[in-house]
Length: 318
Image: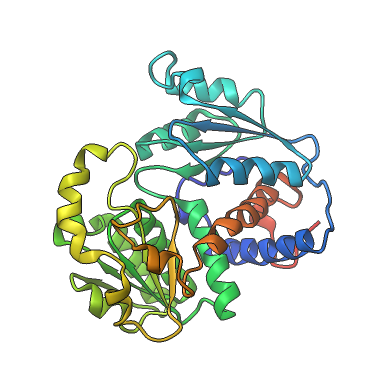
């Protein structure tokens, strides 16, 4: 059955819980040297308009470790929207593979690809969201704290990651405080949905301007780039605006002992985060990076394996 995961909101709360459960078990099996090939004969296309390290390699290795195959299609090979229209590309790719992972600039392009592709389309990143990253982040939090409900995340800065965190954490009963300049706060439609989810999930959301206050009671502090790919022309302007929001030793001095530091990488060291914090004992950034592999294996297994994702229970695993 075709299922598109363009937003983290495309997964129900029980499905997210199931993915985390299966990802943890797949990770344990991998470390124990056990393997299987539940996706033998399945193929994934990677249609990327942006450079990638973790997203590309984790998807490729996920398919390989599950017994399937993958094919990478970069911007020069496809010419999406220039050499060939988005609908034509989507219709063609869907004839050859069982799912497509996309890494694009405009979120609308990911949605348009999904609209015209007959197989499942997974967002590996857009300017609006980063759903696969958030699955890895949730897995990391679960591993570190034993549960997600009741945790408090402080997100400091500006990024698409904040949107996906807002659409995921409150549904799982976790609180989130976004500390950013007033002109870079999350979109109203994202916040509206997040507030509804928080009310239903017994969590709270706070939008703040003071990063020190945001991190004071946090279990984890999340930093991300002040400018994304395609926004390099704004780098100088954003550095000036976001400088007070740098996650550095002084800021972390306002946090409690044991507060984790998270970042989706790549990091602009010396901008949004300092070397001392990124490489320090509280940092779990490379645990997050590793968990991209295991969370995406669980997602792919749910989409392409049997039973399908919509029929999963937390105990379902081949």
